[in-house]
Amino acid sequence: MSLLDVHGLTISFGGHTVVNDVSFSLQAGEKLALVGESGSGKTVTALSLLGLAQGAQVSGQALFGTKPDSQLDLLTATERELLAVRGQDISMIFQEPMTALNPVFTIGEQIAEVLQLKTGLTRGQARRAAIGLIADTGITEPERRVSAYPHQLSGGQRQRAMIAMAIACQPKLLLADEPTTALDVTVRKQILALLEDLQRQYGMAVLLITHDLNLVRHFADRVAVMERGSVVEQGNVQEVFSEARHPYTQRLMNSRPVRNVVEASGTLEPAVRAKGLRVAYPVPKSGFSGWFFSGRFIALGGADFEVPAGQTLGIIGESGSGKSTLALATLGLVPFAGQIEMSGKTWGQSAAGNLALRKRIQVVFQDPFSSLSPRLTIEEIVGEGLLVHAPLLSASERLKKVELALSAVGLDDAQFPGLLQRYVHQFSGGQRQRIAIARALIVDPQILVLDEPTSALDVTMAQQILQLLQDLQIKFALSYLLITHDVEVVRAMAHAVLVLKDGEIVESGSLEQVFMQPTEPYTRALLAASE
Image 1 (tube, rainbow, N blue to C red):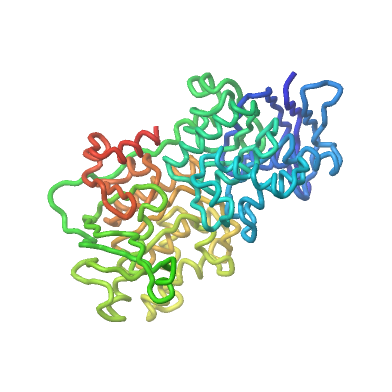
Image 2 (tube, rainbow, N blue to C red):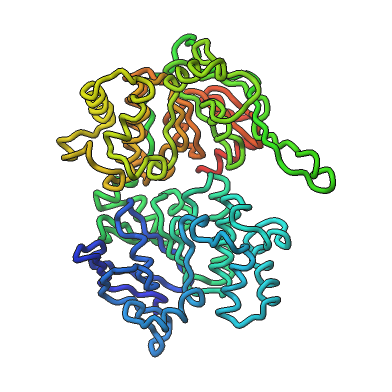
């Protein structure tokens, strides 16, 4: 008998159906992946099993339990019955641990709370058990980390803490909602290995919700593919991946980044050149001397690089390697030592000089929803840069440039009636990223800093944005400084690669040289983790 049997699950909000007649089963100890693009209904399907889809009208059947006389229908269960199941028999790992973990409690207190509520342990016993769970999930120095707050941990450590909380009561079923999306490749591989070890150790079944097909290939036993609220294909992972039958599944399988760039020919003038770039931050010192002196944390030490005109330099490395610090220094947004030169100009010469450089170099951030103002219309967002860099333009001239910028990224009024007066929340993730790119392009920059431009997008949207960036580079001869942890994105976009580790450049060279013949063990580890 299956551990979980879902039949005819239908979920609606305000009369609008978002999940339609979904059925699947999950055996004890089995790993099933729910795969699909954003908006396909994956997460709300999982949330409905625990009664967490607020405001939803749910119908169908979801029988949980391996004994016929004690099975519980999760969809009709009372709140009291669900409270007994949540955290005890079914646990959930949420996508973003920084928002799922309580910032005012230590991770030890949050893990111990589950143990005290569900198993009746005393406060001391729960704390000792929490230390053991933290150790089981691979967080170093568990006796010290148990007293750490979420903001004091790295992304990978926060995800491990979330996993420790989820497995505290050794649940029969673990719901994992995009557990590795925000992590870099090596940490992602570690978390995946951790989940596999814990799954075998505790005999848990795992329902994995993801759009990462590579993760599914390495982790799951079976896969169910969802499109627009319906399961269109399901079966053994190897069978579905090798012989996908549904056109949507085939499209997902073929959504890998495709290289389409103008290859380097001859010697090109650098659009950006950095020499001895160094960034350091003051940090408090321990002990008596800390009252009078502060230490220095070297975030980036002595980096030399250049980005030729019309080409892309890919910057790869783990979280904390110095990638974002390098980007911020190049943008002139943090104090730095050394030199950054763009067409003979450097930061800090004068206010007017800095303004001219800001027109020359623009940035596209990782998450367009948080980087675009929710209170401004699309016309105001895209045209904002013109108010600073082209203040003499008339309203009609500014409007025309806004329309041209949006058209360049594939958005127009024919496709989206009333486009200019709409707001950010009315667009999908991929469309928001196109708006962010239009905002950067409108001042006619020569250089774009791309900070993880596709990591918040699912595979098909990411492929579209990469194709757009490639087309724009060719059309406008743009130079890109590409910051990413996705090796496939670098492979598709970059002409040259720079590998960062602990603020130092450990390897650099052409794409072919670094990816085909890496000399450093760290580079080889990054490439191996992405396979």
